[in-house]
Image 1: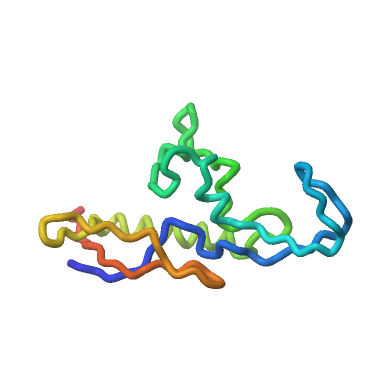
Image 2: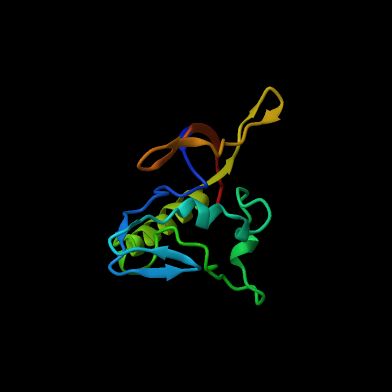
Length: 145
């Protein structure tokens, strides 16, 4: 059962709202004057070399600690951080969990095989105010419970 959808393995909003420095300050040797506009680059946090080898690849073990429990690495901030963190983060997390569990409990999701080769989604996208992924096709096979 082919299903056409959009998906991404990158920040939806790579450049969250800007901040303004309220006093002269120095960070890691860089002087930042008062009233300087500061923007955080979420892509550099989520896809940088500090993530480990091949940050563009989905590796669930990055989120599993030594005791086998779920951990959130310091670099993982999909809803930003601090006082300007996304106000909808809690409801987004719960909604995504419910949607994902519901989908995975009813379907096996695979990449389509076209001309003998598996076609996985591109990690490229169109960058603007948000990062919009390219469309792609997945196969949904009903799961018999």
